[in-house]
Image (cartoon, rainbow, N blue to C red):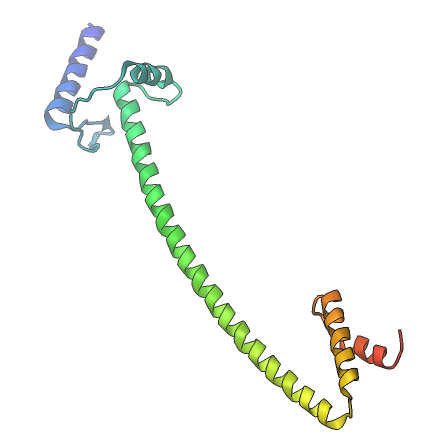
Length: 167
């Protein structure tokens, strides 16, 4: 008798699903609705179907239908995430290019100011000190070698000690 009642209940539930596309849940007297389902058919290769059947348990799916629904949701999410990723990469690239361009402009302005100050300093030193051309050429070669050696990190104290012949 219990088996007959259960199968009658299952038939009623199946009819409800087929006719309305919704499944009722009787918990505490409330009726919760699931999203509407549409019956459709498609062709699938036997090997793919066999592979799905093998993975039903691993996917924690109770039926092929549930497995296919979850697989489609996953694939749609994957495709959407690819679009989002491409958009984010383009946005990030645009921001980085803009930031680099701003930094480049700021550095160029600073280099210009430093070059201006160095030019003024060079003119003052040249005006106040009598340096012949041979000494100037020798100083130039020494400075080029030093800047290469110290990778551009010029230290006034080192230059002062060199000029005063201190080591």
